[in-house]
Image (cartoon, rainbow, N blue to C red; front, side, top):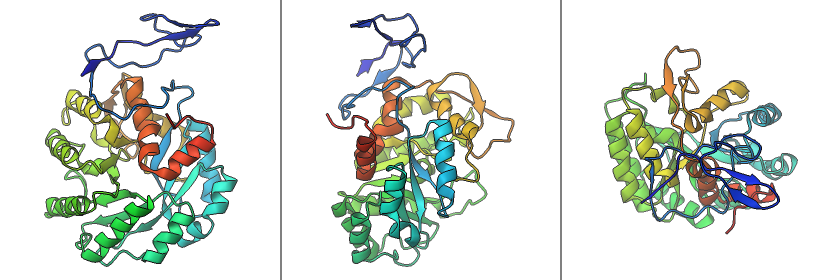
Length: 347
């Protein structure tokens, strides 16, 4: 384990000079470097480049555009809020047919993922469909099984395995819902267990669970997710819609922050936003809670509530991983788009 310092600063004065502790970056903007007591895990995939906040790309790995005319609105809001790429998990057949044109028009900033929302039946795509999705440059496939049984059928597992061979991760894999939510069902753990069996049966397929697997809302859930991460190296989660549950005392800020530091290579930034709901302020709030200290409006979908959540003040290296590097590592189409946009994604 290694420790980070309180502040990292670099000035360019014709030559690189490191001046620790001055609290400036470039011409004076401080970059977050966590806390002096932070410990960082070893063995992480090295970052190709450590970006500062001003130039760092942000990839929203979980958002929804349901109509073609919503793309322009979404990109405008992304520009205002500093979001580089968004992965659309509501990719209908219409979107897939026009995926190449969408990628060209928006320079790879809007990526397409077809979705299945009825996994009590067999996933609707065929083997030929999967080949077509890969050729069209789709980012992956969205699966929303919620409380439907059957996601772990042999037919579905065969399709999940083919996705792995084609480099198409399972994106926004939505299983169950938080006990605190209005969708509480008695078989929540049974649905989680079924998803874990799928993940275990498909070790060469990447699974990115939606909403932190709904296991980042309580201290005891963090313990469970920690065990799952240790057991399944192909398991990741996106952070969409989890912020509203981060008001102390449970989960405790200290435990949540330590968990994020330990598993920083398994977490992807996401919002669950859409063109009608996403605003500059809401998007900024969704990442300011990760990178700053202080108190913030409670979550992305709890905007009008009075409760506040504490900022986590994560180190710059951790933010780089969550905002873009983990998405680049797990979603090949994101990696290509970042490279095409001029970001350094290769060693």
